[in-house]
Image 1 (cartoon, one colour):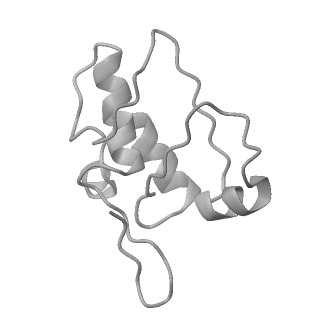
Image 2: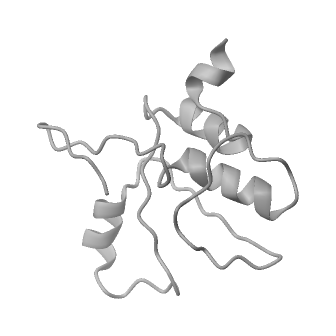
Length: 104
């Protein structure tokens, strides 16, 4: 479930559908110790994973541009982190930690 603010922005869902949870799912899948909760989604991962990150491209933008012609087998909607800056997102994705955990 994604929470929309009055301005239409989607708030991060750290309880199971955020980039932070994705990072911890990948850490766990490849034998590393996760640093937080994993995704609530079943990704059915194999021994090889390709993660494509396009900075500034949101789920709704991608859906509007591509419509039903997305050439992927599965597309999952997850939330970002706050603040949604490139450096914050990449730090969370690479470490599995929230911004607060990496600052202090």
